Length: 340
Image 1 (cartoon, one colour):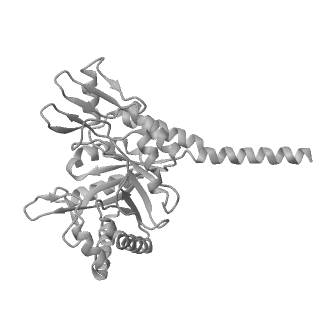
Image 2 (cartoon, one colour):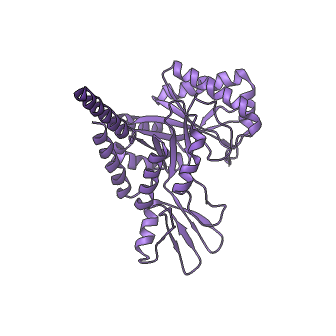
Image 3 (cartoon, rainbow, N blue to C red):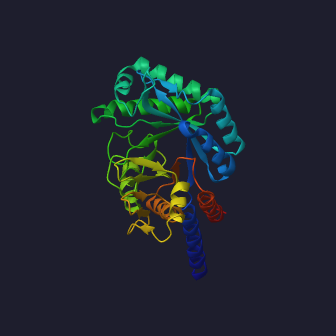
């Protein structure tokens, strides 16, 4: 009896250890965006082995909600992206965003009026979904990331119905679907129907006072928004760009690499936000820089894993130092070791 009890305890301990190890596994992904395609593509070419998925931020919508290719992105670039991803054994996905490009070339960001039309018309919905499927199959994408933002709460039910139908139709074609959700506002897909990825940024941005774009505390708070993930494996999007708030009121985006160069050129001036480990510099001329480096990103990745996120997407490739990819590679090695 004692021997059986010892064997049982050993088996339980072993299985518990396996579960604990498997629970730390997380998949990494990153966006390549149409306005910075060349730099993003080059980073994917050089360091793509650290990613499981890459999504091309490439399609906007028209006044009916139908997908329209961003004019800056040629068909040849899309094919080039998909070919590279498959050669690197990374899943190539496509992102559709509710930005509307007008005839004069101006882009209206995160517009809901076309979605209201789309969600309210069954024929339009059917045609739009067929159009999405056609684009995915034409280029060889594995799935689509739906990035519809600033959706009015009164469209919650119609939005839920649309996402449910989209997922059903995509599954028929063996295509995937992931829904990007905002950290605080906006309707969510019906519980348990969709794979969800939450945006963990814009605590501070170009329209606010200086500060971190996200913090570890913020990452832990918003996980509740994606508890309804279809597979119980919610994703999180972590931003790689910072901001420089200038004394004259202008605010400009700062690449990861540029932030590192500014730090090198200003020795001893770097400080870290208490609790979040995020670096910032207050210059004598009144300018203020906040960005993420390897230390703060490592903290965010660690926090994300502990909070229960199983997929981490980085926004976006282009302008990132080699040390960032080395950081992700070190995690990939740890995950492989934990799942042997």
